[in-house]
Image 1 (cartoon, helix red, strand yellow):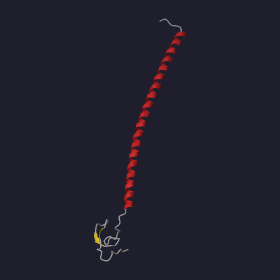
Image 2 (tube, one colour):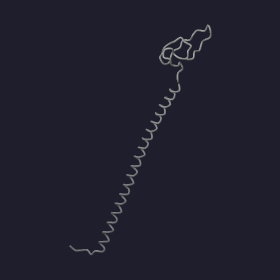
Image 3 (tube, one colour):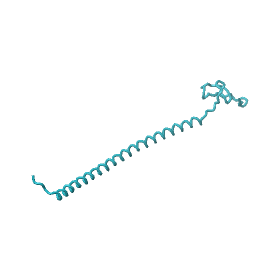
Image 4 (tube, one colour):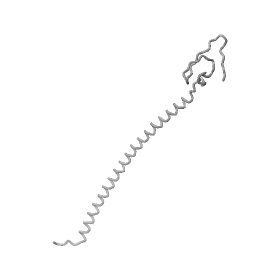
Length: 115
């Protein structure tokens, strides 16, 4: 354990341990009660903050993409339904025309029978 001695005649500083919250009159770099360093470790807190921020941003991004995907899927489904309806209408029109033409051709070729 390294000990830093204050200059002769200088008062020994009071230090508050950031870990155990004890106040000690010491020039040492470690708390006499819990033996942990008086220095706070900032890097783990910053890393945790960045991790939480990244998770939140990714969560919002994923949610936005999912909502956009749902909207696009709905629009595609609506477009497909419209196209199917148009095709069905066209097929029905063609079917009606074919039946009409077939009826005319049959009427032309077959002799009319009197009742």
